[in-house]
Image 1: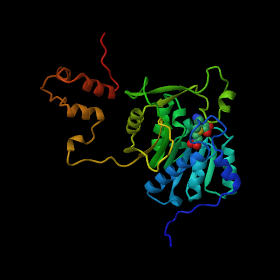
Image 2: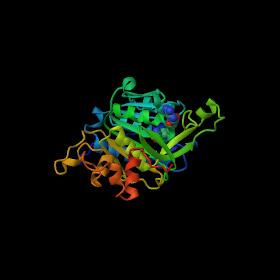
Image 3: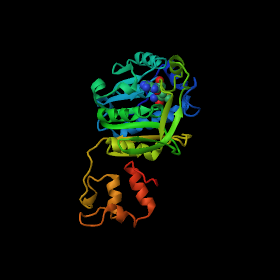
Length: 312
Ligand SMILES: C[S@@+](CC[C@H](N)C(=O)[O-])C[C@H]1O[C@@H](n2cnc3c(N)ncnc32)[C@H](O)[C@@H]1O
């Protein structure tokens, strides 16, 4: 006899059709739409099930930019209390109807712009879903959204997002450079109505900012997450090369006894330390000692701190 708590819920044909046709209306890319989205739902639910420090019925989950809400519905079927948000109602209202048919009383849908959501407006959540929305946000608002999410997070955040495979458009925030690409969402001349009608796109911003993977990981580090990992398994056959799933946990930062020098140091300070660039007060200045180091090391250390050397 199986001891597993896992079971398949019997969904009505209309709800199954909603998920089977997900994204096929256009605007969501050409891969991982319709039935192919099943592998994403499987991956996310496995992460939540494996990493959450309590069973689903004891979890409070928020799903940012939920679309029709398949992830929210799947979590609510497992007994979690779920708040699902989207700025557009066209797809969300179909999810709300499905939730009603399924009797999911702990799931609430709400029309909200994710840029206005914060600890004060919605409170804290054990698990945060952030799927298909990061790459629809623009600089500098994206940094405020990530900071708000960190403050609202009790256990961990799951992000599924496009990334820029190469940088080129660099943005600055709090003294740090982040590499990525600006991506055009709407023509400047597009009316508000036209922008809203693109159901899978940004709500109104004409551009969005796609981080490179390195920049996104560093940004989540700077926001305060203690551990950031990329999820590979459960596998997602045919996931595009420029799309990744990330888990960012909010734990207590560890202190190391075996190498006490590393405690509380920034990445920049670690580079300086390892290259013996931290001067005692009586020794030659950092600048004169830096001349002895390969340029690449100096450039990388300065880049991390949002600085660069320019010949003038
Ligand atoms: C690519 S779809 C992703 C939907 C869903 N999270 C998923 O992964 O299937 C992007 C969603 O983000 C929503 N959206 C875009 N900008 C938003 C904003 N500023 N606030 C709230 N929702 C937004 C869109 O309405 C759309 O439903």
